Length: 303
Image (spheres, rainbow, N blue to C red):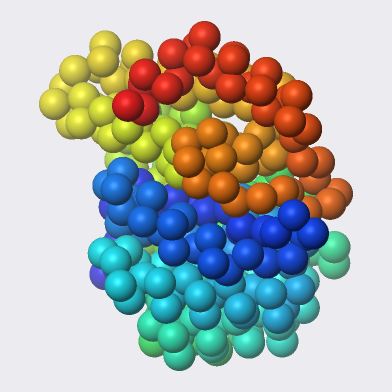
């Protein structure tokens, strides 16, 4: 595959109504916000999108809405289609191809886990076969799935089984393994980085694209980081990376997923509550978060 994702890809939140149902009307302002901030690709229905808490029908409705909205703005959509149930994953993949997604991605099942590389390749080959015309990315995120299969070994073994294998979304802090993934079969595969707080390190190791949740509301920080890195201004790049680290540390104190969704409201894009078992920030918590972010300088950083 010659498909490559470059620059920042926002892993978007799933908008919900106050009663916890989907709020598909919020997708359009969500997409317009990304475009205003120079984001040209959205990764939908992933971890940030609370995929494991959505029904199959909700995920299909979300995909349909995002692809419809994207036709009216300069934005491409990568659809996360991973699921515990293989037929569900195949249905999501086939829908993404039918509706014109840019690519699909899938994390490994995390209840009945693939214990070794053959099982993981078998699962992903079956899934990717439902959308043979789309680039397929394996989504490596061991902190969430608990899967310990080496992703570089997966890429090497899957190359002969998955014709549309484009690469992987690497959401892990294991930079040794990241390098191994990048160099599989003479750098044949795209290795898109997924740890926002370590983006500078990944750029130094050759990353060209990154998928992350803080790119929804803090894109200017990372855009300056990337520009400084490519200009050889490592001091400026380090300064922007440390801003991101400090931002993420604040969000983590409130529960990162819930706080990140609340920050979208603070920057003018209301996406509603998180779905249980995630906790939604209370109005008092949101006010305290706003105060902390203002003291940190966050609103100046993204101005």
